[in-house]
Length: 196
Image (cartoon, rainbow, N blue to C red; front, side, top):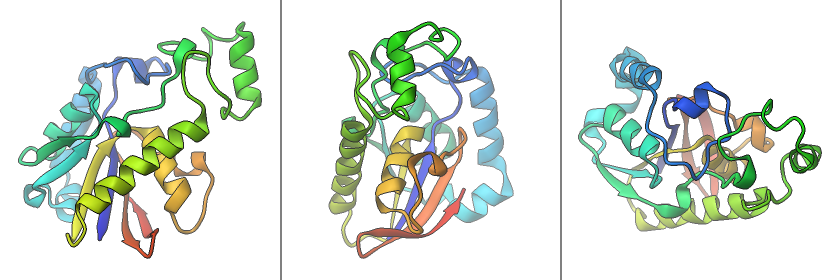
């Protein structure tokens, strides 16, 4: 099965380098323009053939649904609650400058951003949630040739850290807004991973 995972377009919070997880932001004008440019590009049209994509799995957040509408206008969107981004708790809608005097933020960064965020999630729980949702979507599409996701950067990194080949750490699977990865799901692994 071919698996495509694309990160949503830029939001106002992305432009301010804020932690945006549970906040349900729409796309920024810049994000919309960038996605429209990607959707019209020859490489996107030839590699992903958006006109033939009939279904796409999305997070419940507006930024993902709006991005899917721009990139895959004919596809039915299937909302999967557990594909949402990490809950950043007390760091939500703040950037590193806002948090430079925060003891909790300092401790989280020293843990390589893996410890539990107050009022939020820890990386292990978030990654487990993301991967369980991903596997459920694959299970629901057993026998199909292709599956597409329009989700969050953290969701993509979690899935590829768990299943991507060659093995890489979480942040090595980072994807810019409007971009992501395409791979082959085979024997419980994502192989032949290529950026899109």
